[in-house]
Image (cartoon, rainbow, N blue to C red; front, side, top):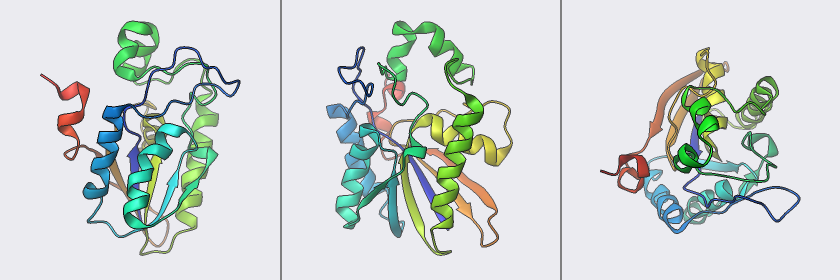
Length: 204
């Protein structure tokens, strides 16, 4: 079976959440434009199911694909990002000036110091292992999640030292192939051709 691991599109910044449940930003107008490109980008894949993190930015990114395919989106809390429940959310390109210490740590490939790395990696793998277990061999499942989630899953599959090894761009696609005996192979990481002109880090 095939996993399409898709990072959410560009979300809003929330410096102080009004809800006791923490910051849960939706997408910006630019983020919605990025998400809108995904239906066409995923057209070659026979997606049989869609699973998402419960966070708004992932659910809103999944929505155009679900609508185009006539599929419902199943939510799994194990696919939430490591910042789930925090009182603020700052997109990574803004963190360089707003939270430079955290930005430097992430740039070096490490999770923020408030994260229990072992627990986070364990729940992410449990969530994605459950997706694989629930799929047939010929299925392709689209999973809408987060940069940290995708990175720690790749870390486990590839036996990498650092949890944040790869740049995982907004609305990017990472493909993992799983054989009948359960062996997983990374087929691609961070495909962005469909949104390259909409990504901040590629602007001149």
